Length: 288
Image (cartoon, rainbow, N blue to C red; front, side, top):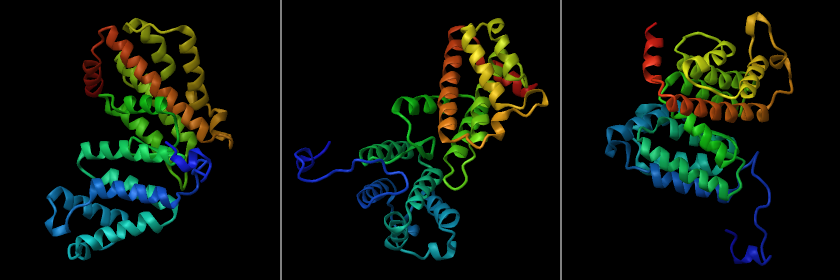
């Protein structure tokens, strides 16, 4: 909510999305959240889980020596983190957020931090949100909900494809949009394989077998996903044009991630309505 001075035009609020930058107020609010959720005592006074978190952060993110970490006091450890968030280039701040989400072992804390951080990013008009542990270019709350729901499926191969898609799309140094798209469609292929109980069947054939398995979907919808699959795959050894197009970009990858996530959720829901035992199919596929 804009404050009095902004509402009456005495001061100017932010009117543009922060994409290649993070302003000072946003950095301070992110740091306040990090302090709220992750601040602990010195290394020696921490719990084993907190010590492992600090060791991972110190070794795998800051690339510093662990013997030095163990001799530091609380203020010195978080002094390094504070400097990183408040003073380093904007992309390093998002790297640090991802590192804290990756290394921390308290899932409920990570979930609460993600929720509050996304709220701050929205209020400060950042062009990014946290989804599935990755900082990714902004998508709507409805789209985020679809991706999050698909990432929480009980089937690890589906989750792995979607997580990989997110990772490839969100890489700020070298994003790989074509392969992000392929991972998204692979998640759809995977859920279809589980529904029909046939490991290794390609998406085109799996879609044709859904009705026999008990899941009836609109023919035009099936045609649409067959076309998407043809756009993204190397079916029958033919290299499709999509992979060679330099114009494949973030918007394409984002569209496919959200669309495929929504279709995964839809198919799982329809399979459950049809009383298909997806867990039994999945276990049988793994053992075959």
